[in-house]
Amino acid sequence: MYPTLLFLHSIFRWLVLLSLIYALVRAIQGYRSGRVFTKTDDSVRHWTATIAHVQLLIGIILYTQSPLVSYYFGTSRKEALAEPFFFSIIHIALMLLAVVGITLGSSMAKRKPTANGKFLTQIVWFSLALLLIFVAIPWPFSPLATRPYFRPY
Image 1 (tube, rainbow, N blue to C red):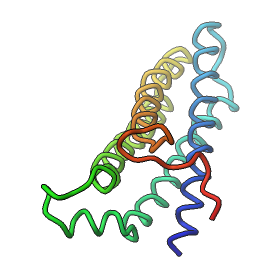
Image 2: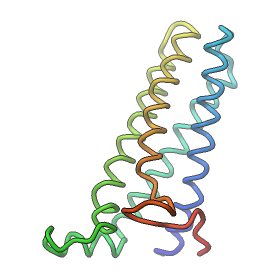
Image 3: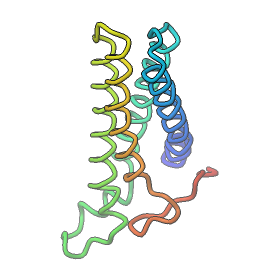
Image 4: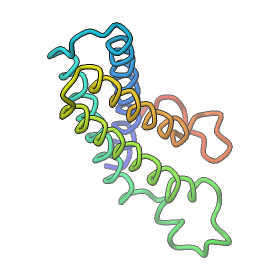
């Protein structure tokens, strides 16, 4: 089950990034042009949040199964290595905050009375979430934890 969860989590990260970037591009274009907030914009907002929630659910299940997390919480903090610390504390905390940001941005944008208000709310909250996600992803070049762009399991 663990390898399957890793594979799904690896694939869904790209869906989260793509949907978030697409939602941001649409929001920026809509805000700049002053256009009406369409059903497509609303659908993109909704599906971006939904994809992020699915990724969070997979991540939480993976967190409970992870040998790195088990190792980190089974050792004294002084002996913990960077990689177990990254996944046990940093990654999950920042990703939780990012999904909360996406959720708040989506929810608040839905309730704004004007199109510009909807677009601006999405721009602010989704940008903050995207920044957190970029910091928390274990990129292949990261000094704290390196992972390939795709997990082939």
